[in-house]
Amino acid sequence: MALKTRLSDALEIKMEIKNLELKIGELSAAGAKLGESIAARNEAVFRESSEVEAAEQKIKMLKGEMEPLKTDPEHRHRVQEGVKLENEVETKSRNVSELNKKIESLHKAGSTARTISWPVIKITERGEKMIYLTRKIPEPALQYLQERFACRFWEEENIPVPREVLRREVGEAEGLYCMLSDRIDREVIDAAPRLKVISTMAVGFDNIDVEYARQRGIIVTHTPGVLTEATADLAFALLMAAGRRLIEANRAIYRGEWKTWGPLFMAGRDIYGASLGIIGLGRIGQAMARRARGFAMKVYYFSRRRNMELEEKEGITYLPLEELLKSCDFVSLHVPAIPETTGMIGPKELAVMKPTAILINTARGTVVDENALYQALKSGTIYAAGLDVFAVEPVDPNHPLLQLPNVVALPHIGSASIETRYKMARLAAEDLLRVLNGEQPRFPVPGGLT
Ligand code: DGY
Image (cartoon, rainbow, N blue to C red; front, side):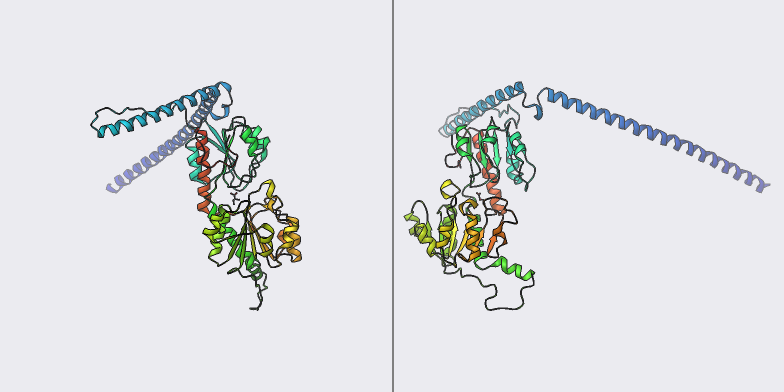
């Protein structure tokens, strides 16, 4: 009996479990359904909210509060008013802080006058002044500009901005931050009716129509000084590489041409004690002379103007151009690209150089007649060349000069050390800011002020 009762109890419990399982099944099916409808609901809400967001953006654009509609004349007028007010506030702030300084100095004399408090007010939002950068520049300099202006820039670092993009982008810009590889000519300047400053991240500015910019009231600035040592380092590295055939020797290993030590295998020219002729005694030319001293080189120079003081100080000697070309083992070019220096080293100049001479060019490609140089190198009129610059850049890899074993070629990297490029980027940004703030730039190019 007892067994019977226990069996029926067990049966009941089993049935109860079954019922519960059924219920759980029903509930979880309902839960899944609910989950589905919640997800559908969420999606709808999400869709709706992005529609609302898009609508809000549209409203903002229509109100002229967003970038794309900044061309709208009414908005532009408001911006101009805002900028005017902001300038006024800035001037007043400056006056107040001058006054405060005076009051503070009076405190020392026992005065109890109270300093004036002037709230820092920013009336226009940051970025009302638009600047265009033709390249992605090192982050700290970019950030420096972005904190102060509405910056638009070509996002690539190693691809130049297409002309049509440049022309379009400068349309609204008050500042243009460019590279030496961007041609800033009349066409670009004419496309930039609001432009006040062109700041190039380079010392050379032959890519910019400075005279036309001046006529249009646009200031042009550059970055001299900070790249002097890096560029001289590279010029000297090229001198050594071309003199001692470093690249040729390096290639020989990979080509399996190093069979044994040979008395004249990859023998080049002496550097220590050789003579160096520097053409153009600007900052970089002088820095080159300093490096040559460490190698006991006899240094000569040719320049438009003699500099007796430097001759004395650096122990260098002036020579007329032809004399220098005739007598120097190494000739290094450090002149700017101006009409007077175009083709300065041509067939006539190369013909008087020593057959053992080596030409170094870290200035600009146009200074050398490249056809004449090719002939001179091929025929043995001169011994070798180290070239960081070319008449057309980037140089075509099939360029005849690049096919010669006695040419060391580099892709215009004179100033390319990270530290130097950061400094150049910052300097160009600072001068751009100065001009847009109505101050004098520190480094206008010659003839670049209005
Ligand atoms: C310059 O800045 O002009 C130099 O050519 C960089 O190497």
